Amino acid sequence: MNDLDEIRRRINHRREKKLTNDHFTKLYNAMTKLMVVMLVGLAVSSYIKISPNGTYIKDYILNSSYYETITSWISQHLSSNNDMTVSSNVSYTHIQDNYYTSTSNEVLSFAKGRVIYVGNQDILGNYITVLLENGIEVTYGQVNDIFVSVYDTIDEATILGTYSDELIIIFNQDGNEIDYSTFIELLS
Image (spheres, rainbow, N blue to C red):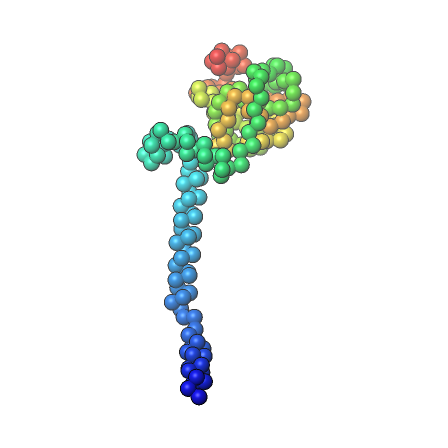
């Protein structure tokens, strides 16, 4: 009978052991810490994407020699970068006023820059504004399909979208509109 008493004692001991609030508190605290870490990671990733050229992060947090390596790794592994580039020079044929056309229906960027606006207006329709590295803003209007989003960094001849018949292109330098020939001179 001694063995039976021992087994009963073990069974009773296991029945008495229940989950307590302490177990749930530990689980809750662990989940809270995990969510905070994920939120900080998301915030840092968003700031890297939003900050122009990541200057704050580059100057104060990351060493300059590793900045390009880290941002290229992040863009390769964590972002869905669907940029398509072509190897030809970008040229448009001027029709009248701010209306242009090209040999294809693709909207190509003139030079390297950053997308600063994507939206819709009555006159421009769907439009994309790119701030080029030389400080000139180029706005492409009457765009059908837009392949870029705000704060994307683009290279020369990156396909920004498509258009049907005519494309509106507006060039601004220091808040003043400039014409196509002046823009081409400044670009070269």
